[in-house]
Image 1 (cartoon, rainbow, N blue to C red):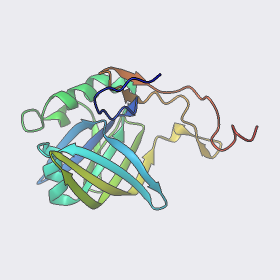
Image 2 (image 1 turned 90 degrees about the horizontal axis):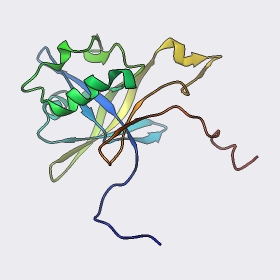
Image 3 (image 1 turned 120 degrees about the horizontal axis):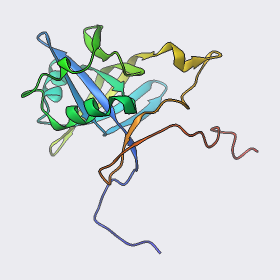
Amino acid sequence: MKKKIKSFPLIHPTTIGIVGTSFNDKVNFTTIGDIAVAGLNPPLVMVSLNMNHLATEYILATNRLSLNIPTKDMLFFVDYCGVYSGRDKDKSLLEPFEMVNELPILTNAPIAMILKVVHTYQHKQRFICICEVAETLVEEDLIQNGRLELSDLKMVLYGLDNFYYTSGEIIGEGYRVAKE
């Protein structure tokens, strides 16, 4: 029997992303767990940030951002970017990055996307962006035999129990489990 609890978006765990923004020659990174695939054709991603984030200010000014998918080796940086504001700390000094199309891409993140904002929505303190993926960049070692190999990718996941998790175990192939 299920028990009713307070209303809660209990999608557990959720992928952590690090949003990279740049405006007036200033680079900023912020950690977010509120990201989702919003479509494959066209390739869309939903990103939700707090209205008060410096990243939100930069996105409103440019309609562009990068979305970097960190690994567990980057956990300190992930947590740091979630704890401290870019208004108070220069987070670009902590982790190497390169500029791609005027947006910062984390060197150590094996997956990065360049996103173009196509629609925004504000609900209370949340700033929600629907973004089209303009470019997807992956480390070469993630491509094996002509296809993406993600089983060894130890992405950072966030549980709504306030713990970090990681990914990696393959438990079946999509659109094949039911056929077998």
